[in-house]
Structures are given as C-alpha cells and as structure tokens.
Length: 212
Image (cartoon, rainbow, N blue to C red):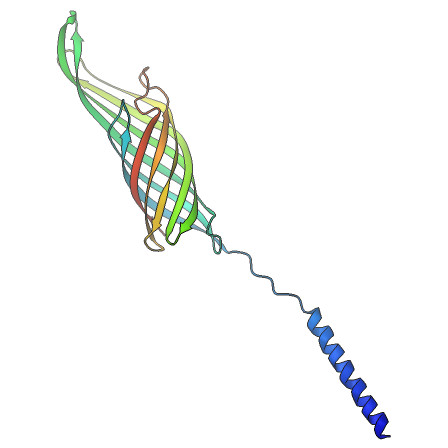
C-alpha cells in the first residue's frame, strides 16, 4: 500500500512538471514594438557666401518644412521644406552713349536674385549630437536688374530654372534647436539672354533651425 502511494505521488509530480513545462514552452517570445515615427515642423534660416567668378556675394535664406523621424532609428530622418533666398550685386560699368563707344559714361548696375525651391534632406547620426545631411532642391529664380546712368535708365526682370545639391553637418544643441553648416552646388538657367551669374557656383552657409 505504501509503495503504491509513493508511486502515485511520483506520477502526479511528473505530470505536474510536464504540464508546467508545456505551458512555459507554449508562451510566445515577446516582440519589440515597431519604432514610433513622428512628423514634426521646423523653421530656420542661414547666412552664406556665393564663391564664384561672376558672383561673389552674400546670400540669405529662410525655410519652413516638415521632418519624419523614427524612435530607435538614428539614420533615417527625411525632411521636405520650402526655401526662399536673396542675393544682390552692385557694380559700376562704363556704358556707351548714342554716339557709339567713343562716348562712355559710368552707370550704376544693381541685380537681385531670389531663388525659391522645394527641397528634400536626408539626415543621419554621426556621433553624439553631431549629424550629417545631404539633399537636393529645385524651383525658380526671380531675377531683376536696374541700370541708372546718363545714357540708360531702365529695369528688367526675368525668371529662370534653379536647382542645387547640398551637404553638411548638423549639431543638435537641444531637441528644439540646432545649428548647421554646409555647402551647395548651384545650377541656374540663363537670364536676360546672357549666361547666369549663379550657374556652376558654390554656396557656403551657416544656419540655425527650430523644431516644433
């Protein structure tokens, strides 16, 4: 009788252990949640210098856009933004009068160019708070020229295709504020039936951006 009781208790213990093992093995392995992605607005601006043979002037830009970032993915920021720039050039040139090239007089010539572009930017973490970025944009450039002198007093405006590619570094001062520096390569169609002064030029810049 005692032997039978011990046998029954041992069988019950083995069955319980088997059942417990079965229940444990049936549990699914927890799966990490997918990264949470957010769209956030940003706005900023930059000061730069166009380094070219035909146009060696300051340029200012303002932009506003939206950026998509995913938590846990340090290399996957996608931003789309609208940007407006402004640059101008003032020179004095000798202009021939109605009697031909023998009569020359100095004329003040001022030109303004306003690029308006839609842009895409890809950003990726480099180290710590420092990121790198690349991007491209395209749109139009509004150009205006004014000539003021004794022989010619006139103004004209024109519109041309404008595009650029850019790259640089971003330093995240905080979650809401960042500073950046980089360079752009500019392509611009001809204006006023002459070669564009900004075509095939390089634009260096420093800027800041607020994230909302």
